[in-house]
Length: 396
Length: 75
Image (cartoon, rainbow over all chains, first blue to last red; front, side, top):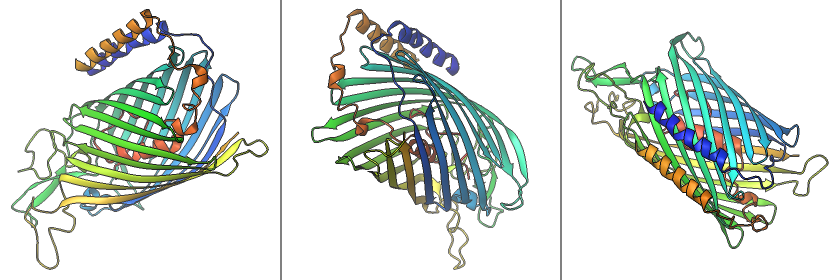
């Protein structure tokens, strides 16, 4: 039903995009570019390092290819996995290829992305079309992607794995974007995204807990049961303004809701300050809050208390805020040989997560001192994460 | 149903704009500030995709911000 709605939405707009096309000048592809990227995430019991190489090459004035390789290395495990006394060591490798073709005022993009973990395989083909119109003041973008996932669970250990494949999931993403130049200093954009999922959608590593008077801790753990469909709608409005002294400020707001009753609101403010042509300094503040899913509970009254049951903290009521700073240094501002310029970037962010109905049961119900909490009285969970990103980009 | 209505209103506004023959009010030679690298939405695609994946793996919301990459991120 929801997919049909999304189709109905996109078809008239696709026709409009074609009807309203103007032919004043032509779109151009951006410069060729190569990037080396490193990231480190630490927080909530997890350490994740990410490394990436990517390159973009124009083969003609109308056609370019992008390739990127990304590898994530995970060690540790988050609190809801730790509460089951299992520690994870895993690696995710992602390959992505994108072809971009420009014809007059239209940009066509085709991409394919493949992501592989020991217990999770994901493939996503994606297509989009962007059309400039009204003297290039307006750009409409339509996109569609289809992701097929194979979901497994490692029943062995981190070092001697034994992966059991549990099922498949399929996701379709329908995207509509509108970007608008408002004045010579001000741009804004609106993005609308409907995603439908079908298949095995639960996280196999997380468990529900329910009251159990026969258990020593007063509760027992059980398997999560999720619905096998989900449809979400996200709308994001962004606006960016060029300040009189050569700096930029941007604001964005995203509204999200889905058929699992999760409603999310995201606010973000960014400020960009260049210094001569050598440095670009940026500051970032982001706030996010969400309601819990209709079938989420931190503690169910008894086993199989309802048809669907989840205790994944991602579906709990929560909020978080991010403070970030980023500095980009242009080390070849005048170019060198085949390179037009090069930049080096350091980005540091801190995210503070706070959960409103997810309790920390790891160390609080069985302390050596003999003090223990009754089930449901444990402290609410919270944690901080630090993210470092370091990368170098060469433009040619 | 609401989202469908919103799309049709948007389509109507675009159609009316076309019929009215609106001229571009920011001329190409007035777009030097908008062409400044500091006005680009996402200057570094790898970083944007990475940070979107960080959030999508830890929040109930997804989408509306472009691609966030694949994978589970569920440990």
